[in-house]
Structure formats: structure tokens, C-alpha cells
Amino acid sequence: MDVELTRDLRAAQGELKSLEDSLDRSLGDSLAVLLHRAEATWEQYRKEECDAIRLAFAGGSDAPVAQMDCWVALTDDRRRFLGHEYNFAR
Image (cartoon, rainbow, N blue to C red; front, side, top):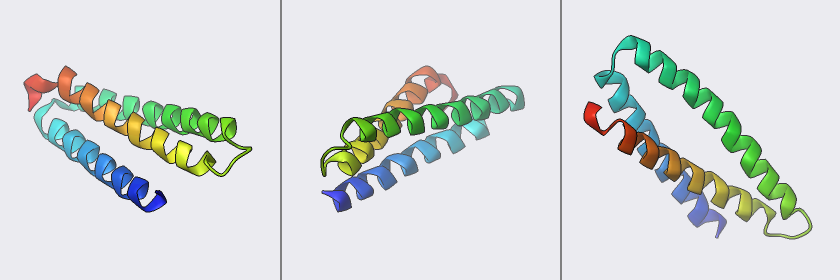
């Protein structure tokens, strides 16, 4: 399970990075700067949200799996959101 989730997380992060790079090339500098700030804030949110999930499962062996699953889900959500909201720029 850990191997699959690690692979899924790498894929999700790669897809998100590819989209972000594409948006950076397409958007003006001012908007790109704002998106980078939002990305930093979102990364902190993702960390804290998924840390909370891990803590919720702390009594069992599923804690790391639940945390990794959270990272994958939130990363996929971010990619879908950016793809939808900035579809005009790609």
C-alpha cells in the first residue's frame, strides 16, 4: 500500500508541477507571483490538514497511509482546481 501511495503522490505532484509550470509561462508576472504565494499557503494547509489526519489515526498502523492518502487527494484537488479556474491560460 505504501509503495502505491508513494507512486500516486509522485504522479500527483508531477502533474501539479507541470500545470503550474504551464501557467507560469502563460500568465503575466503579477498573476504568477500571486499564484506562487497562494501555492506556499496551500502547501502549508496541506501539511497541517494531513498531519491532523495522521494524528486522528495515531492509535493504529493506518496513520501513515491515511496521511499519504490525504496528500494525494489534496494534491489532485489542487491540480483540478487550477486546471478549471485557469483553463483560459493553457
